Image 1 (cartoon, rainbow, N blue to C red):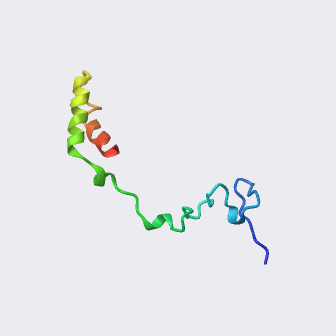
Image 2: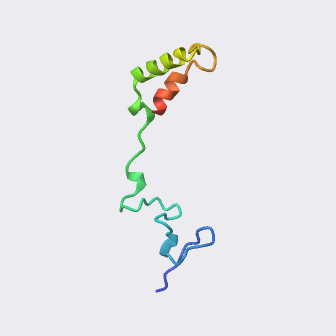
Length: 83
């Protein structure tokens, strides 16, 4: 039985299944024996802290910005969700 290789940008360096530096060319394998699909990514709502949103609004105010002006109204919320 001959082992086939999957080309990875035209190169496989002799690794089986196209493996190169631990990556599998999109086969959803994270290299630790577990599928990356087993654990869903956390949603931003799980990490949202309303107190942090208030701190961002206060920071904008202290920097001389008006947090209620167009373009900044939802910025404290976006920053809090991104953290």
